Amino acid sequence: MDFLVSSFASALRLIGSFSPDVVDAVRTSLSVSAGATVFAALLGIPLGLLVGLSDFPLKRFVVTVLNTLMAVPTVVVGLLGYGFLSRQGPLGVLGLLFTPTAIVIGGTLLAAPIVANYALASVRGADPRILPTALTLGAGRLRAVGTLIGEIRFGILAAVIAGFGRVVSEVGVAMMLGGNIRGYTRTMTTAIALETSKGEFAFGMALGIVLMMVALFVNLFLNLLQQR
Amino acid sequence: MYRLQSIRKRYGSNVALDIEELTIAEGRLYTLTGANGAGKSTLLSILAFLTPPTSGEIFYAGKRVDRDHGSVEEQRRKVTLLHQSPYLFGGTVYANVAFGLKARGIRGEEQRRIVDEALDIVALRGFRERKARELSGGEAQRVAMARALALKPEVLLLDEPLANIDRETIGLLETVIASLPARGTTVVMTTHDPAHPGRLNGESILLEGGRHVLQSLR
Image (cartoon, each protein chain N blue to C red):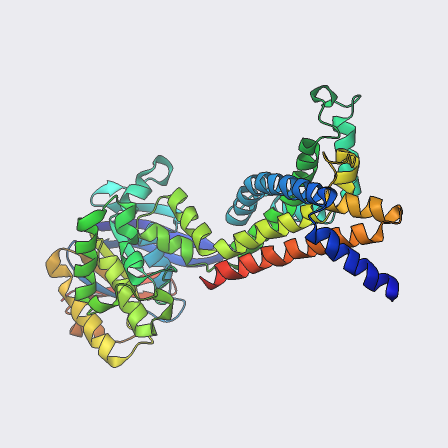
């Protein structure tokens, strides 16, 4: 028990002293997660809306694929990304492996199905009168869909936040595509894995606390928006 | 205003509507009656150009409505459907009533004037800044009516607008509805109340099992 208490105290000291390693890992984590979330939202929200609002022959199959993609292990995405971005891979010429951009690409692939599924669920759960009401009041198809998005904005926001949560908390993609390079591609999660394996439990705990704080602030932000 | 020819609407194997011919004249008020499942709401949705018929032709103001060549959106702006249980968007009463005006590019002072006029008609002027979702059922129905009236539609389609609301609101809305043909708006309204055609000085259309069986003229 003493070990945990003393580690916790050391972790708080590390956070309070703004240890450069902690700050670097937090900054990298937040920037790549934000980037991946933006791209995942740009892909996932329209995809979820499109699947939710249209009827086409393979719709059930597409929904099943989207559901399955939500559960893909992060290391599988990392492996796939590695295959494409490594020097021998088809995109190796771009030199993106072990860069923050590679983590953003992998994170986007991880988060997009989650955002799409949440957006799809929001559309399915939306009041069926929204679109006909907008249309009969003279809105064109595009404005009517815009109105629908406005009405289900909290569901869409939850979709984006779930995507962010998936990216910020994963290890596999960041490790395999980022390479865990100190001060460059080392994220909170890869740093926790590395430092703990080296016996630096307090350092790992400091980053764990920051990670939990990030999750808390994101959820507080969501609640605040919902109350307005 | 409308001429429907051989209009059929199927949902799977179920025929919801099967109308050989129906004419709706401009500037009149029609009450649409029939049992539950008679096809009243389906007919209104087709007249509002929200639901395409499975087969048949619709002529509006003498022109054939062609869904494939973009004329539906243009025609839809001339017709407004008010649902039995209207949906009010999140936000204020003002934002709701102004919705269709914005879609038509009407903004600024003109928009405010039209919204105020429409709220006056339904006796809700003081409700401009109220949150739409916090209104009572009767108030919500009146806001939805104001939202439709603000657009001065050529045709107003009303799906049981007087169901489930208090007597005072019914009286107010009946007066508003009865006054519309004189302002040039054609009204088609579904109802279960047999007294409505007489009270609203309207003509009656009866549907049975999706078929148009009677049209009485006053």
